[in-house]
Image (cartoon, rainbow, N blue to C red; front, side, top):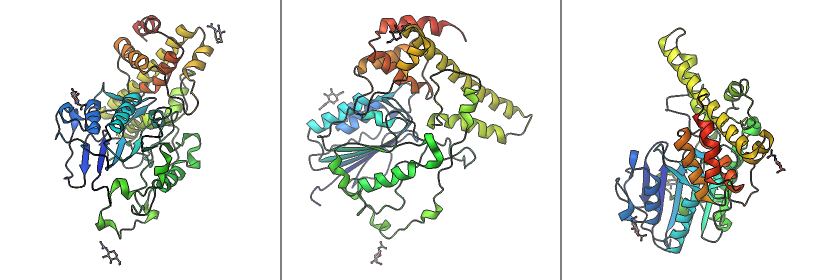
Amino acid sequence: MSWVKFFVAFLISIMIPLRVVSLDSSSENDYTGKHVTSENLYAVILGNKSAVTGGSGKVLDSGPNDHIFIYYADHGAPGMLGMPGELDVVYANDLVHVLKKKHENKAYRKMVIYIEACESGSIFDGLLPKNINIYATTASNSRESSYATYCPDDDFSSPLSEYDTCLGDFDKANLREETLQHQCKVVRRRTINSNFGEGSSHVMEYGNMHQRNDVIECYMGSNPINDNFSYDINHVVPPSPRSQFTTTTLSSTTHHPLINAHHDQRDTIIHHFSHKLRKAPSGSREKRELQKQLDEEINGRKVTDYRIYEIGRLLFGTQKNSSLILNHVRSPGQPLVDDWDCLKLHVKTYEKHCGRLTIYGRKYTRAFANMCNAGISTDQFVAALIPTCSTKI
Ligand SMILES: *[C@@H]1O[C@H](CO)[C@@H](O)[C@H](O)[C@H]1NC(C)=O
Ligand SMILES: *[C@@H]1O[C@H](CO)[C@@H](O)[C@H](O)[C@H]1NC(C)=O
Ligand SMILES: *[C@@H]1O[C@H](CO)[C@@H](O)[C@H](O)[C@H]1NC(C)=O
């Protein structure tokens, strides 16, 4: 192969490590814990050694003949991806800006990016140019959740059931022959599962579509030891139909127009608590404690739902106008928001006055984005926010 070496970057921040892997490197994690940050991610991608903090200091010091593969799995929200640090997120425009810069620096030949997160399409939709040799696949489009395949009564030996099947079709792939497009189609078919009905997600493709015909090995490499490996597809646990847990809990007690009826990755925490609750001996202290945690999580969600709804009502006059504007989804090919600084400022301002947005609360970044798109200034936003968030509920 003429392109000598290539790099693989793994960011699996749910599991904490950020790995920067090249053909000749060890498999140690390069950045763990508090060193998995958006700033380090950008510096690693850009190959800027002096900009990283902590970790092994390894960066993608790639050149014009290299192929790069990036895999990112975390919680997502409209326009953003989670990071392990509570206040740190990756905004779509910042990531795409870094990718454009990497292209300007002529620091790769081709790049493939896989993102597994809720609303992950919003990271690239309307933002990723088609002419910078990047092909991206996301677990879901820009308006939907990405769905967990683990159900609460499956094995909970792992801390949280954060993973979905999406993009996980490595089991029977022959990396030397299977193309990216083929892999995408297989995963897409398996992810749009009729049992899931509305709660299925759509694997999406963005960027340079010519790269779909490249074989996976170009980006992910291949270990000769696995050449003859075959995987029995019958032993793959099929995705279970989603359970009805959260919607029934929330919608039986609240009627806010903004609550959507999906069972998404954001509900894994609820499944986790309720599963443990079911298993705890009745009348035990553990059960009471778990019930309290579950109630707190659900109440916290109701408070957030109410606040966003109330802010919208103050800004847009009526409930009807507010939910029309805040829930609006722009057509494909348009970015989530025109003014990203406005979105960032709204998120920051909300968190200052109303408390940190949880993984659940972050689903309202689309509402914040729509406020920006509707021309709501920070002053107007603050004027609606202060009375709403200073009221105890
Ligand atoms: C690398 O990062 C440092 C610190 O953020 C910055 O000052 C410098 O300009 C960057 N170098 C390049 C080549 O972008
Ligand atoms: C894979 O199978 C082929 C054909 O049977 C054999 O020649 C080759 O050595 C095997 N490779 C490995 C890594 O076992
Ligand atoms: C609701 O929206 C309509 C159409 O944009 C507008 O004409 C009307 O004034 C709005 N109502 C209020 C109370 O702001």
